[in-house]
Every structure is written in structure tokens, then in C-alpha cells.
Image (cartoon, rainbow, N blue to C red):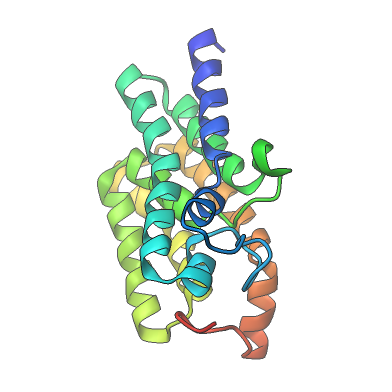
Length: 198
């Protein structure tokens, strides 16, 4: 792999390792999201512990972590494989951040940013699915699981058989489901919390 490609992937991981939730909560004088609510450093938990404004900032930050490296790869004209690896590196940085003891979030917003970087329509379709399910059921994790499960299909629908991107995205979705295993258990038992509940 050329040096530029390696630097792009490494840079994506380091950017992904910057926890928007922790940084935002520290700057706004809020409790550490890892010790409050669900304990997850993500936008949904920041909504629980701090309200809409810090949650919106966290969401934007987490999405940009996935979007910007992929856009950089697009601008540099890297191959679809390297582009997919760049997105995966940003996603893994969010899940396992080197700057925060490898204790990160669940990756939904960062994956969404990656998908917008691959193609705006893929990101829009995934985000639209999340909004539709979230509005209907008011369960963030359920919306995330359904929306991201459809992401490989949306990639095929809008980009065609780019199997490198589709395969890497499918791997990210599997990892995202693994990170949501406790949510899945609560969904099955009917105990998952609703959006906006403490």
C-alpha cells in the first residue's frame, strides 16, 4: 500500500479517536458521559445527561469524524478499497479510541458520516431510515440497527456492485451490532429506553 494511503488510513483512525461526547461534555461543564446515563460516549447519551444542544454538537462531531477522512480520500482519488479502509479506520477509532483508553461509543453517527462520504444518497437513505424508525418507535438503538443493516443494500442501489465498499460496510455493520448487543437484549425483553428518557 502506498505511503499516502497508509497515512490517510492512520489519520482517519486518529481523528476517529477524538471522542466528541467527552470533549463536548468537558467544554460545557457536563458529567462525563461514560459515568452517566447508559455510560456510552455518544450523542444519545449526551442527550440524556445534557440536553439537545450538546447532543447536537456531539452528533455533528461524530459524523464529521467519519465524513472528512472519506472526503479526503475521494479528493485524492484513492481506490475503492482504500476509501473503504479509510472509513473503517475512522469508525474503529470511534469504537476503540487511542486517546481514551480504547473505550469508545457504538459508532452509529460515525458510520453515517462515512456513508455520506461514500455517496450522499447512501447517507441520506440511511439517515432517513433512522428518522422514520425513530419517529415511529422512539427507540434510538432500534432505529440505528435497522438503518445500518440496510446500508450495504443502499450502497449497491446507488453505487452498483462496488464490492470493496459493500463488504467493508457490511463488516462495520456487524461490529456495530456487536457493540449494541446489550441494547438488543433489552429490545428483546422490552426494556430498552425511549428517546429523551433519562
